Image (cartoon, rainbow, N blue to C red; front, side):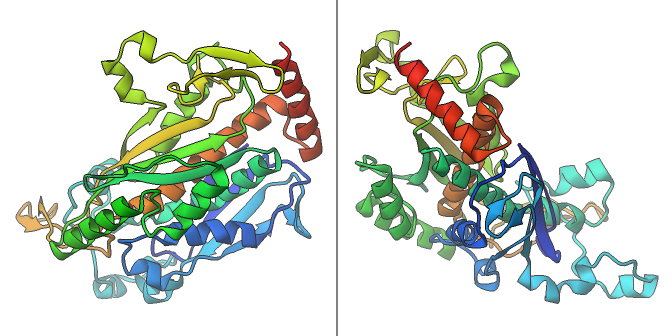
Length: 390
């Protein structure tokens, strides 16, 4: 299973094509739109979220609410394109029209892809870079992740996420009883945090950053319950599933770190306090007394909940812009300002859920079949029975 995305931030639309989604999966636009709406929420979002009301159009691969096994094409239109038609249009324009097209960007913004991308592809107008490198692209990655979540849910695998930290404010209450509870509480929180007291302080930190023309980052956590034992592999470096999850998290715009389980904390502890003791009973089969490994050993799932965290840096577009250099004149300037969020961590939590869900769904289909949902279910059921009595 794989997908590609296409589209620019202020172009006519964003598109993704998903190949390898099994036949027989019940899938509707409403399921995907629910996830798209979650991505647009969150305290600290900018004016773009007031302009765009993301809705998906399924243009292939689904008939009467059921997947066909054929490629699925998903489209999300950019409502703001009507204001950018001349600037972002695909048709050639005359030299005279080129003079009329404003907003040419020659001042790279620190922390963005602007300068490196311009040098790589030879663009003198860095709008050619920032339009594609924009986090707006995550819209259709969330759409793809919604499909992956639907696959996992059909197989009894639940995905949830929450915010652990924003701007140095850390959640103290991070425990939950069920995945349903986690999902309910975080949906009701403006910052997707399980700790209501910390959430208030996080929102204050976001307000303070906004007033100062600054931005703040944070840490998000994704938890997955119900994964079978032994998904992934130890036999080659590029087949280790936790490595794929690490790459997926790091592919999200502005993410600069990832850990699984207790992650970096394990560097400070002796092995006796890190490794998870194995136990067995007739009801649950093999489990662990603890889950410091975050659901992975040797690049494979252990059957325990998967726990993945990602670190998001502050959004680099600031309303008190940092210094930069004009690539045409080589003179110092204040960096250009595009519409921006003061904090996108709550939204990034939703994106993190999506990319994790995709990697896990892909791994499930690789191991248990990928043509028909009913066959995949049977294969997983047999595997779980086998693993339990192994």
